[in-house]
Length: 233
Image (cartoon, rainbow, N blue to C red; front, side, top):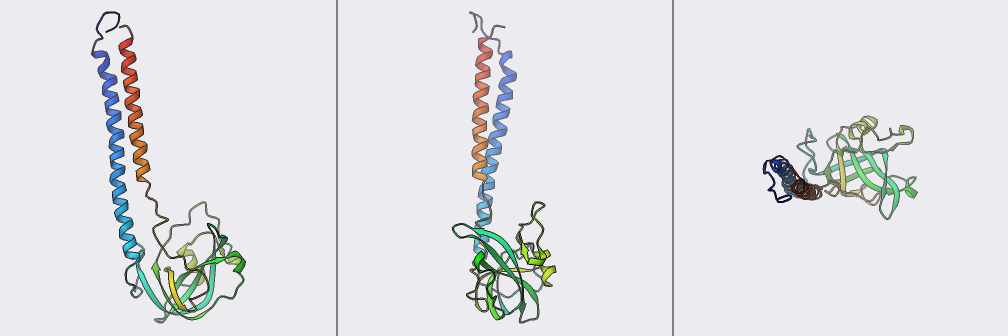
């Protein structure tokens, strides 16, 4: 009621409907993000389970989708030839992931990520020869249009680009990230085995954002309706 006269309901209908619609959409988006969070948690759990499964032989034709994170055991030898991927480790500073060519006992030639080597040790001798490697198949998606091109002459890379590295080292486009090893695979670089730490699950934060926006939208709608009731017709 304004000035003793009741407010006409028709003045409130449109802004009320607009406000309810906006709140409903924002809440729905928040609920969708909660569903995505549960889906992502299940996916990460499945990946972790696969990473820790019993290692088997290298598939004949590894597929990046079907065989991602598949645990494998290799027997063969490091045949010489490797590439250094510039990285930085928290608490350790800069260093390199060493990606080397590996010849399997079956005569195949693939890539093995041997692990982290501190910058001060880059010139250390790199053990070659017979080795057994246990690790996981991985096709990391690290390279994008902002990644600097590799310095082929210095063997220095800024991302693990499996296809490009395979061409340089004349191997299959297959990368095994070492978890452990014997022979030439032991005691050189510190293995950095694959895990799910680099796979984000930020859907909880997204959901909170949508719910806060819904609350703000509801508050603004209530404020608008109050102002309408205070204005004369």
